[in-house]
Amino acid sequence: MKEESSSQNLEKEMEFNSSSPRTIPVVSTLTNPFDNNNSLACVNGHTRKPIALWPGMYHSPVTNALWETRSKTLERLLDPPEDATPQSELLTKTPKQSRTRILYGFSTDYILREQYRDPWNEVRIGKLLEDLDALAGTISVKHCSDDDSTARPLLLVTASVDKIVLKKPISVDVDLKIVGSAIWVGRSSIDIQLEVMQSTKDSVALTANFIFVARDSKTGKAAPVNRLSPETEKERLLFEEAEARSKLRKRKSVEKRKEIQNGEANRLEALLAEGRIFCDMPALADRNSILLRDTCLENSLICQPQQRNIHGRIFGGFLMHRAFELAFSTAYAFAGLVPYFLEVDHVDFLRPVDVGDFLRIKSCVLYTEHENSEKPLINIEVVAHVTRPELRSSEVSNTFYFTFTARPEAKATNNGFRIRKVVPATEEEARRILEHMDAESMQSGEGKSK
Picture 1 (cartoon, rainbow, N blue to C red):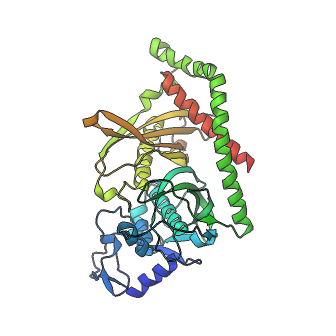
Picture 2: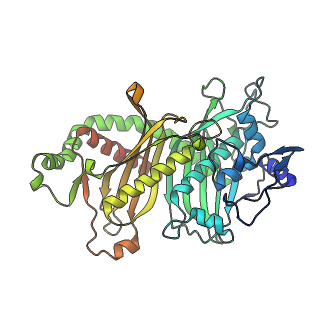
Picture 3: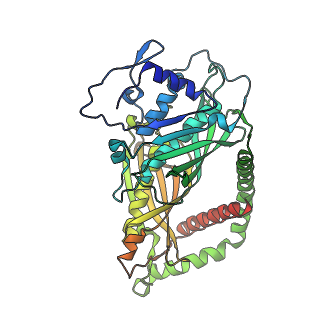
């Protein structure tokens, strides 16, 4: 990876605090074997190793590009002044001030292209999820930064992912651009919308909404964030839609609880009826159905220092990447054909994951949908547990929900292709299915209300 000159680094620092950001280029993180340029970067007269060589941080082409752009802010986060105080007065910022663009030069950077290529000559979705989380984090930092960067920096963490929808395949041979900005803020939360675009017409290939929350880096308590003032008609519309979604989620969560309590017994009974046949009379069970527990896969890992973010916790994008890879494998083993990713339905970051944690990631096919015979849907649930054997404890840290279908070209080669129905064997499994179906119904309601 070629190092940047002092003027380029200074330009990036100015760009990070500018209200009219230029596009941040993404380059490969693998060194060209014929490149002997190993000089150190020079910033403000001081020699500094480039961020790509900083130890104990999660590195990817996008995280390196973004962190180089905000290296001054990053250094403050890693080594905050002892006498720094919380921001005394909140600022009013515009979406334009946090708007950030990154560009993948796939058409000209062979090494970068190979880092992102999947077996079907498309962009690896797992790596893209990492990048989306990293970019959303940068945008949240830009929105929350004060003008002179003297206040105590906030701890900004991913709270949830509302929705990530793939609208069309993303080729790895064509340049790719991601644009994002803050679209709404609450007292201590920030709603960030990202759009992935490809082709000269900048048609949107993928959309994503991330929710970040702010914590005081010293006390760990919720901290207020800068206000947001939309300027254009589109920005005002996005602000109003995000605010309506926030209110609707709070209201419907209460309403859904009441609905589930009122009609839960009948719904549970209907779901469990077929599962009982599998358990009590397996020889007579429907061969086009399968028990939920028979679709499960699991991975385990020890979280390493190289996977941590600037706050010392495991990078959320890394967790999303690992969850996606397991979900993809689960859909593949279940369908018998190569799956095609459609969307991330929802992600909750319930508790932080630390270096050294023993993480168990479990997946299953939660249920399938057959309304469209040409495009049956496979809904995958992935749950990450932080396990402490010495304490005999296991806590859920993250929940992920993905939707897949079968790749059209794979389905075309198998005329007898059929997605099996998944049925629960226990009441706990049935409740998980109903909870996710209700959450999906709520999101559909939000979409219709726009």
